[in-house]
Length: 233
Image (cartoon, rainbow, N blue to C red; front, side, top):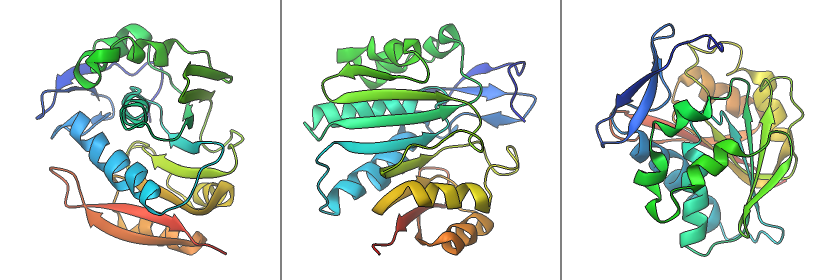
């Protein structure tokens, strides 16, 4: 189980980007086969872009809910993607119980590698206050929620969910039916959830609470991933 005391080791991944390794858990924050390419594939290509292609309009902006702010990489690439493509405005909610120290996060250098034109954006994500709306640009509102996934009040009318918790065998009690039921209840019809995880038990839990679930080819180094869609009533 991750705690504030867990030591974190900087490690370069196969695409040249960095991740953090927690020796006590024998777990990485991102894939060693490529931290940035994993996030772009699982959450942007198979999540964000797929949701846009469904043809729904987002009059008040797309509402994204991330489970596991972690290094801030998913938030950064989402902000960049929406900005560069001149897409709809984003209301980005993200939950984290053990925030990284900003100095540790900045060692990952995601600002320079992912979005060099706005390289200070990465530090602004980490410097943003918790539990309040922070406008980082005219297209991107960030709301970081401090607390346990299972206990915080989830925002409603969610269009897209990034489920990026540590693996089920590393973070027990998270990948369970009650949490996925709560997620399902706050999502808009047609809402999409993506995760790198492809375990059969997780897929069956998602199906049980009502999601239409499909297995997709995974990012480099992983055979499969899951994408779930909330049915239109």
